[in-house]
Length: 312
Image (cartoon, rainbow, N blue to C red; front, side, top):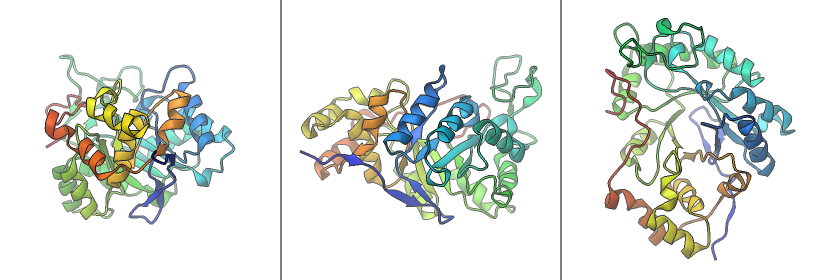
């Protein structure tokens, strides 16, 4: 029988701050008060890391749950993200996020995608949307803006006290190289949050980021919508063998690989279970690691940012 216990481990960011290895993801936790209930439950059972984003449309719920939890603010690591329509003014966007959250600061502010969307086609003034052109394509800014310009502006944010650290999300190795080599770069991103799971292990990206002092954070760690990995044959076999849930197998595999993982759920029992991890045997760890070699790698989150291609 393996020993399951709440994961309290942390990883040091390049700022010196510590980030809990397992956090609660809140993407799509928007119905009624789903986000509020999920965060309250998570904090109640021991989570100390909550991840949200402006575009998730739930910062209000997340922030209220944090403030109502009774857990001291300085014990909770909070992340939110800059949406693509606001890349020209990240300070204003962060101030708006903090207002929605009801917080004085966040611990980490991420550029959500290395893509700027033009707000010119937005008619109602709501920037937390995906503007589209007349042909139905996303209104991507290519000629007069890029993620390097956005990063130059984001670098000013830690000094304001509005965020303790800044980072990136959905960045490829080549995009990170371009960012780090840019003349205006003064801060190495603390984090790169990316899709990561046994069908998309991304070892090369993990190794590259590690070499630059950038921590990797896994979103969609169970395979995104409907958690397809939880019905995968190898995962089920390892779960039965160890008398744990399939989700605990996958989350433990992530933890064992040495980065941050963000399982998402609005189900109270699963929120409790997802924080409990164990050490996989070499045989079981290798079996999970080999899934992508047997079934082929599969990226699930692939929005069309044409003509910009993010994952090259």
